[in-house]
Image 1: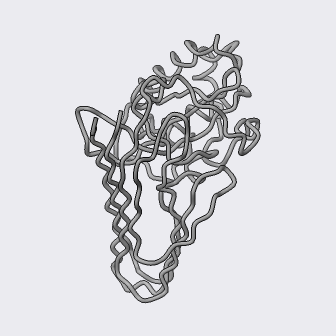
Image 2: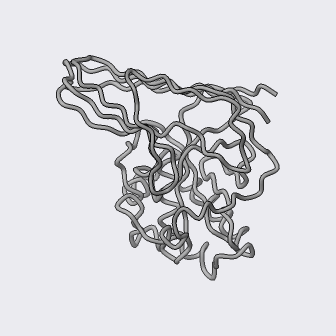
Length: 266
C-alpha cells in the first residue's frame, strides 16, 4: 500500500525569540515493512543529520537570528506491506534495555493491581499474544481516547489515574505494565493510515519482544499488526522518539499547530 504523507508543524511565539535549537525525528525508518519512495523535510535553516543510539535519523536545526515563528514540513511517499506480522530487530540496542522503566513509564501499585489479572503467567513468547491483546482491550476500556486532557510530559501513572488519554498515554501505560513483569516493550512514533479520516496527528504505539521479534500493540486503535502503520522512530518512551523537541532563548509563550495528512495513493 502506497501512502502520501504530509506533516506540518508550526510554532508561533508571543515575543521575539533570539535563538532556537530543534531536534527533529520526522524521517521514516528503513525497514523490510516499508519502502521510502520520496521524502523531503523543509526547514528554516540548514540541518545537521545524524543517527541517535536507537538508529533513528535525527536532524538538528539551529536558528540564531531573531524570529517569531518556526515552520517545519515533512512530506513524501511511503509504501508499506499490509501483510507484515512483526518487525525484525535492528540489533541497534540490546532488547533487554526495553525492560527498564523510565520516568514516563513507571508502573505504580494501582496500575499493577489492574494489570495483574490480565498479565498473570505472561511470558515473552507468542503463546502470550492473545492474553496481551486482551489486556490492551481492557486498558482502552479503562482509559477511553480523550484529547486535551494530558500533555507530552504526563506520566503513565498520571494518565492512568485520570482514566483518559491519547495514543501516547495508552502506549506509556501499556509499556509500563508489561515492563513491570519483565517483558521488553518499546515506544514507536510514526503515522497511521485511516481510510475514514486522513487528517490526523502523528501516532504512537507499543511493540513487545516475543520469540525474537517485535509485535505491534496499538492500544488506541486496537490494531495488532502494522498493516496501516509507518515507522519513524523507536525508543524507550516519547522523549526518545518525539517528532520535534528543542529549546529556545526568548520567545515568550508559544502556540503549536501540528497536522498530519495520510492518504492512500495505490
